[in-house]
Length: 326
Ligand code: GTR
Image (tube, rainbow, N blue to C red; front, side, top):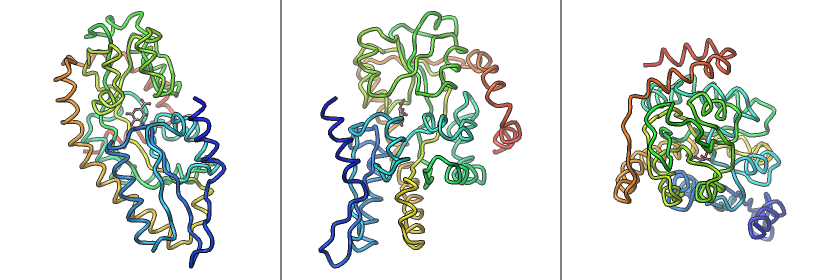
């Protein structure tokens, strides 16, 4: 904890540092991610950083802080808003509380499958949402989408139906929409940061959580005891690469264009890495004895209708347009 706090203080103290004495000033850009080195999002953003350093002839120096060293996503979003982190790859889940418009993508079963989600984020609706984030008062500029695949439930006891979830405490990301989603699915949703989930499962503070295969594997949650992976596919949440508005406003228009271009390239690279990672980590989870439980997820879809009704009312037109995307 102390180590983490020290790193956060360091990030704040040195944010946007310029190293003078060189032929021209160098701006340090700190990038952060909850995932460890080697994870698709981290690899893609690091590659973007290298390209940025080269394309700017060293005017920018890129530093990646992976593995939640700068805090959980809520804390990192806050640091990005104040300009202590310049680039952040985050799920859209915890962005909902600061930019409520993104919650349209955070609703359970809003996308039919991953291919549908990709068609939506790659098209006009995806661009509109990026623009809404950038135009919001949240002080973050949305550069590109990333893939977070499809989230399913993992628990200590096998779950096949909403009734099996009765009395089970399930960790959800920090957004009331997700707590409502889990409550509607039959369990008790508990919001907490990603970094706390392992211990929470291990000590019985929660009985399980939900995520995609690469996260379940790399965060080791199955080793904490959650060995049953029920294919609910209830949340298909795109992820996003954002830049702090504080840092963005200091860029020249040409560098802003460059940043968006490189962000877009990172999106495409991450997608390729993502598909390989889902296959690879699913196989690894099975080899570690995690049981993938195939189910008909319609009862979970039906159970979450009130959540879509409650949160989706304000997005009715948009949800219709999302549904119409082939
Ligand atoms: C992962 C996602 C992270 C984080 C995490 C969580 O799938 O990539 O950005 O949101 O889930 O559950 O907190």
